[in-house]
Image 1 (cartoon, helix red, strand yellow):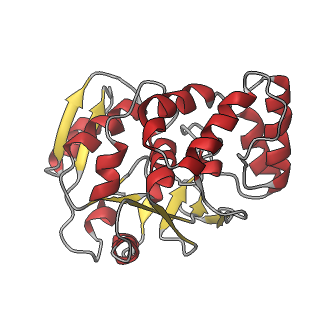
Image 2: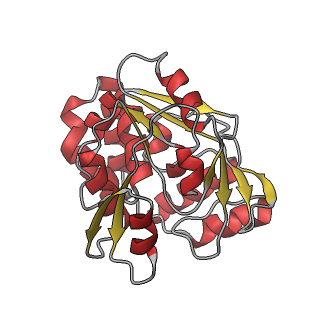
Length: 262
């Protein structure tokens, strides 16, 4: 994985690493590569990414986690697309999913209904290992509050509210699928539904944290979408504007809204 980061055709790449209290040989491997390493206690992946995001000073910042393999043009494709945008922008894209030996398993699903703030409130469509932020987006995302579900979802939510999401349907990463990783990517109907049914749906704390930090800065339309969703949690009888990409997944969301289970 590290070799694929250093082999990018974009030019100079600075790698910032935070060791989250590992007890194996991770530190020795990282030190042998001469990386910018921050060693600390175990605080979890969200706070670890937040700590590194605050240190990043480059024009573009990419998230990197697990042991995925980046194709050589991953960063150059992202930078080329981001340079077309003025203002905060987040690049993300499709995954080529592989097993632990990098044998191909298939492609991740394409978003069917568009990437938007109404989608980002209830679903993450920007997979962390594909995300690249420009400087404006990085500054906008800021410090991650304690209620954040995942760093990539938070970035997708914040940038969708104030900037532009740039989605690349061309896979630029080999996503290694493991049984025990933090979040799974489904390939095929059975695998996808297994992931959906077993994942948590505690999105409200994250949405409330977003409202606390950003509501007053939203434009009127985005503020209306946010307020209608939060009102739906208090028994208001109307259809909120939020949606998920797959129709069946959207139906599951609405059933949970009715039952107060989200």
